[in-house]
Length: 132
Image 1 (cartoon, rainbow, N blue to C red):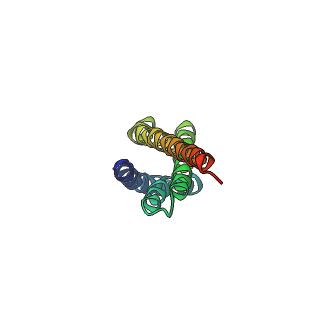
Image 2: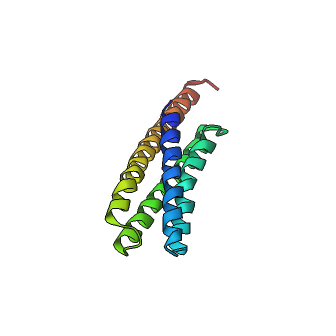
Image 3: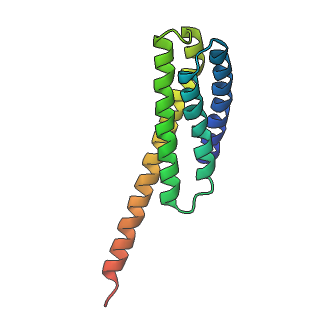
């Protein structure tokens, strides 16, 4: 269930990133706009992949990469704001969404990592109680 909420937020964010990309490209800024487009749209793609992960470890890996991409997107947005490529208003219209995705993905990876560790401990304890 939480993956679907994250996916929906990431998908909506991707749409905003694509629209921002178009605006920035119209101002003849290509390098940073491309980087932001790449990292910003990768978040949703990775969350989508995670929905069909082969294992919990695969799920965790994809979500960690999505977290890294969300964090990178925050970087590009801040850099573009601080170098006047995007306005404060444009930044404020999209940055909170990126920050929210970072928080959501941080929470998901933490919870998943704890769940995997708990399962490992339970398996180890079960293996230790089985007589040889």
